[in-house]
Amino acid sequence: MNERGYDIVIIGSGAGGGTVAQELAPLCRDGIRIVVLEKGPKLAENEFSGREIEMAQALYEDGGGFLTSDGGLTLAMGVAYGGSTVVYTGTSLIAPSRVIAGWNVPGLSHSEIERRSRKFMEQNNVHFLTDDLINENNQLFVKGCRRLGYNVQQFPVNLLGCRGSSLCNLGCPNLAKQGTHRVQLPEAERGGVEVVTRCEVERLDERSVVATVRPRGVDEKGGPSSWEPGTYRVHGKIVVVCAGAVGSPALLLRSRLGAALPRLGHGFTCHPALILVAEHNRPITNFVGHPKSYYLDQFVESDGYVLETCMYFPFTTAKSLSGFGAPHAEFMEAFPRLQMILVLACDHPAPENRVTVDRAGHPVVHYRFTPAVKRALASGTAAAARIFFAAGARRVHVPAARPPTVEAERAERLDDLIDEDRFRPGDVTVSAAHLQGGCGMGLTARDSVTDSFGRVHGVPWLFVADASLFPDSVEINPYLTIMALADRVAQWIRQNGRDLLAGA
Image (tube, rainbow, N blue to C red; front, side, top):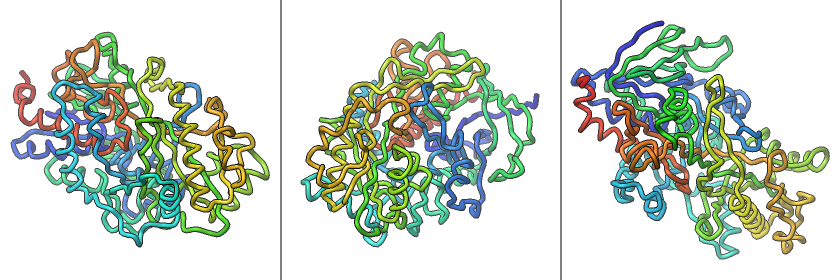
């Protein structure tokens, strides 16, 4: 086994790991050695082709097909230099104050989350898009919402030089998205932090990490690792785990920390999401321009759902449509005329929803739709369909209805047509990309995995800094909240980690 020694080892390079790396980089001037271990590859700028299947295989865990234990939910996780910040749409919202208050984490305030979030909004050029980049798919959503009296809002996004390719979820081919791969990680490397790609961490030992570096496959995108392929023991005085809401709890479970941390893996939430499509009588600009510019969160407190504009690619769209044969083909043939809305249920922790590992140590996510989630998906589906019709759609594909095609003349019957019991494995295609929880913050090991600074209870050299820290759903895209918490973890290490770094 190869041996390596560092002062600080960071596992993962997404919103959490990239932020920690940047914020700790100034320590390198004092001789502190810092390394980031990233499971995925680093792609060259010319490798972002925009081809759906090709990029999904290169940038997502299991090619974008990671399933929950019962196969009922697809979980999207980025695996690359920059993590999921490479493949999300750039939406950048500050967590609501009521959410942070509801977390009830001692020592953590909303004002601090907001202050730290605004720091990264400035770093990553978060702003509202100009009208010339707002396509008709988004404009029709606004039109439908306003006709119904809904309070539609525009997303701030972290883009610089957007050319409207609409390929955000496949890694921006125009290098406009300002994720950690474009901002925090390069800055960290300039400061002296080492980043090792294709390096999968298997387990933690006492102040060390056991990892395997994979060789680059013949047809794989991305460059080779800076380390030779093989197994490594990487010693570190401080280890910061930023492997995400599935990867981080799974890693801690593989490292046999579950017995002392009974909440490890629990509290998993993910915003289960459903893609709805509607057909208009004419072609609309749907796959040109930024795909996600507006949202509706007016009903999140009362009905538990958020609606967002979206535009997905042919394979993903086809997978999201229920049924087979001619009716399915008709909607796909109408692709240039399709408008899309994403329905997200704001789920909350349930005892049965958690992350475990199998005998081989692979992560397993157990997730069942609670009655509240089913109601939220059904209510959100009905609201989205009304928006489509208010915007002038001639028909809507409603997977939870039978038959799933609802013509405009049946719009008044939507509540009767949608059956919330249809939201079960194998019936309606539901996916999730806002994965949260599993290493929740709290006061003691009885009620949480870490404290409010991401310090793992009972393991003073071990920290967590990613979305797994969330005690409950943040109800928005978690990107900025992850960065804010990671910034907080990094500040604690800078100010209070001297004894740990001295080996005390």
